[in-house]
Length: 464
Image (cartoon, rainbow, N blue to C red):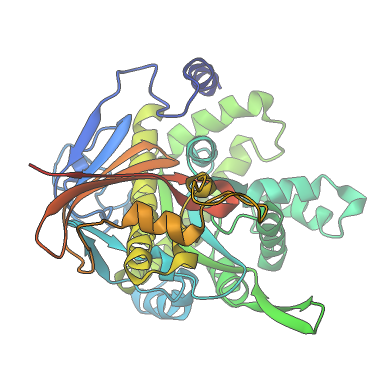
């Protein structure tokens, strides 16, 4: 609580969210080469420069013996498997659809590799993007989700919290008694109840451009099967229009990643007992904790192993983070992972915008730019038609075009991406015109709530 209060104080003093660690160090840029993410330190401005963007998967070897974040997961190493490898492989095949149907192949832009996140959800109308947050009770899932919510375009949904809130409704909820019984006994709540609460919460947030952090789910194979059956399958909903009743697909979710916070039982016990002093939670006691941890090892760890199998040919990535580190160190690992997800978003949007500019697709170009870029007075109009603003097509041609140069060919080099904050990113690169002249372009991207990532600034200058 003290750490969060300090963050709030710093944010109030600085007037921004450039870093939760602004109080600890001066701003600096981290230059990132190739895929050496084990040497990464928490930046105020995080820079990618010409190398691969992907966070190493949990199966990737650690490049440094001093860094344990990417070693074999603690939980998987300390518990006996309750599910055979062949069964896990079958579960993985059956669950592949949870990652969406997008193109998972690596692409390149100016030397930066990325995956096209704009293709992950197809053309369905109502869709949600999800990151599962898993770990034992007291591993720090809620704290990290709160920090992510403050600094990134994220919404934190705790399956456990939603269930606890539903249990408190008593007579107002037909499931309250069953949920309370499961929570106290350390048992898994029926999946249909959890999914109904999660879907309702995502729809209420109205955040198709947001990333939903689902805390404490899936807890077992019943949860995973239920998610695959319910959340990865579109539901048709009729929409009444003036002319007819149309249909749209609703409630579809694509899982982008899984963050697994690992922490040994003795530390979890210390944390939960400290938390129990003022949490008011009926399950914050040693007996419930040990049952819940045992359930986690027996039922959730095999699910995590199953999700690892889905990584190979999808956009989904599983990342293991040691939750027994200091709060600052855990947040560093969490932030660099979220930055890798956001980088895919920004590069995908930038490529779409460039393609729209070259093809003169005004509608797509306009949809990827901030509104203020088009609030330009047109000196050639007298305003007699009620508007003196420049047309979107004219703005695009002036902003992207050149009287002397054309950019029909896709020739980009030396790309650099800087995370000013979790919701504002700068992307610079060299771009060579069709006649062979090289320019340096910089585009600033900002996340604008339901509108998603929009370009808010563009500049072009000739290179020496």
